[in-house]
Image 1 (cartoon, rainbow, N blue to C red):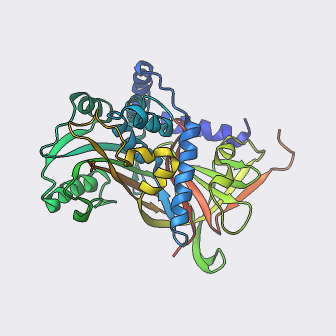
Image 2 (cartoon, rainbow, N blue to C red):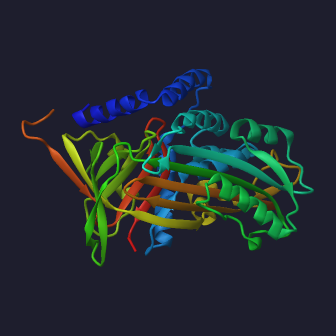
Length: 405
């Protein structure tokens, strides 16, 4: 292990040791994890699906920044997988990388408790919150086993609503959305998303907030070029980890709650896909270096994406069809009519806030040198990024930045 990777890991331990609250949470977590069922989940499948969907969103929005939350989508799909059978169940299992995503969800929601502390860093508290809910049209009866699994594994409670009162239904769901994203995403549903066949809506929210672990970045007071046609003021700092492969270089910068931001710069200028960057190989790389200098713009943008078409191209076309078998969910034959996700990112020199809400609507069928090796990763042209849970190999957010306007 090179010096900087070792330093980063030692730094994480030292940070935890300075906070009695954090140490207690970590100790309790270790005991709880020992009792958790071991879940066989293919993280390579998860990562590749994340890349494919982000590239798909970027293709549909070629002039805009995009961000996507794999974790939020997987939790929403994981809930409906609990009521899927036959080919529908097999397709969801293959996409999720496990035949028991519910067990993984329960384990991960327990694991993230240690990322929530009472600490505040430069105006940011340390939070990572996941919430789930079931919104049921009156007259639809959920299967007992599905409802129990949703509540036990996803902490999702069912609320009965009158979907014919579209405005009140949307207001209720949006209030939940606003509360669980700390106001960052106040709305996910609009009345025109519901019709006479709508019977069930499953929602997942993911909220992340943290200051940087080593204090604020420095911010320039002059503008410099970003890409070919824009100018912006940049932030600079020293990173914690450097990565490099044949297609990209990257820096990792830790947050106060030990999650991290990874900024990825393609080596080739011009348009790129995340798939071409070999992100899995990049994160496993161990280049030699002593220090990594980071440079990037502040970021503030949001993405709204209807994911049904893209998901259909990844092997999940069955869940949207009349052949879908969700007989384990309710007493009526239903299929997925839409999968909508909203994300929002606010990143500055002091820290980051990021949120995602996913809504799945279902309806009835009709070695070191002597001289220091210093690396630079300057995100001064289009780049990709992750907000990453390194310990659990969980990509919370993945994005592509084309513009700073």
